[in-house]
Image 1 (cartoon, rainbow, N blue to C red):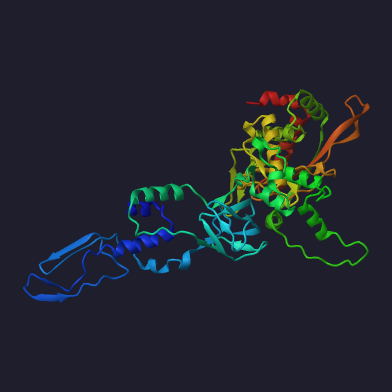
Image 2: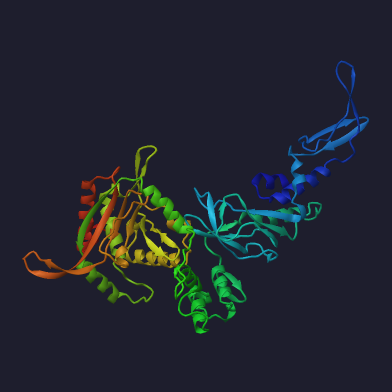
Length: 505
């Protein structure tokens, strides 16, 4: 039974070490005495058998007239038994949070030294270049030592904290061994140190996430007193903020936003001083990605698109929609029409491998949307746009926006993009000059839609809703003619959205 658990890797290290050590001690049934063996030549050789601590013969037995003993073993080294954590202190390292992630920034702690923790209780929150992740405890015990402070950069495999476990399985207790091993198997095989999505936990009779409970703690609010508006009685971040505003604890802005504002706003009445701001999280990731983008030879293609039909289509969607949670904008139609154009121009939906001089044409249209958040610029992407309806794109875009606002995008939301849209016009500006998000080969910046005088085909001047777009392309892969043809097709779908019906599968 134990061998099978060890082979399957379903025993924790502390239990494994003590089990093997105790098992080895109980393996020798009688004391080992000097043994005299007779060889074929008739000579007698006196040999002293020694039980080495770091070796046990695998399932061997030896019987002589003057000595009888049996050794049972599996060929393990029991030297590890000497390394059993003193006092039950266990190191909790930063595990691998995603492919290619070598380090993470420690955002905040949910526990302090001396706190008692339960299994699966959140310990801290870390942020990689791709997502924000909560680290949970696999043990029940007491926080012995915290080794890092918020803002620290922690390498993968480096110890975050030490926990003194309350109970370590005593291998000498052999009763109901099979039931214990089965329990261990179910406890350790299906658990993980890392949860990419915060668990919803019943705390004090209410349903809320650790981030929401921590926000309530910042305002010194009892989470049980906060009115819940979420599904199934779940308390949302907005519920805590609104309740704090009713209590007069804040004046319309969350504490985190007020803190960020105070960090960069000079004091009234003088006393201007320089301040140093540490780049973290998404801002740190932007430094890396833009440094790579600076090495890419860019060229830009600028075009104007008439959006009169798009404006009418948006108005029609609003009039026909009864669901108050669905907010129709121009962006979902632009995303779907972009996917239609990519179908006939796959080179713009590709990735370039500089090492092998290969261009990988991506089968899925995973269109990234650049979003400005309080934590910096982030580019989540909508997966498989070619297979989604405009309504499905609208719902997914809304989900990504909500997750980005509260810094809860998963690594899957951020990774795997094939082309990027930057809707700078939502903030202001006619157009921008975007930089490619490597290893993608194209990015599109869209300016605001504005009413301008426009000459019709009959020569009359009439108002028109016009949007300026700027396509940034990797000139190592794309040439001007390819981008121009792609833009013409995309422009045709936007100016005549009824053509989408002809090409929708």
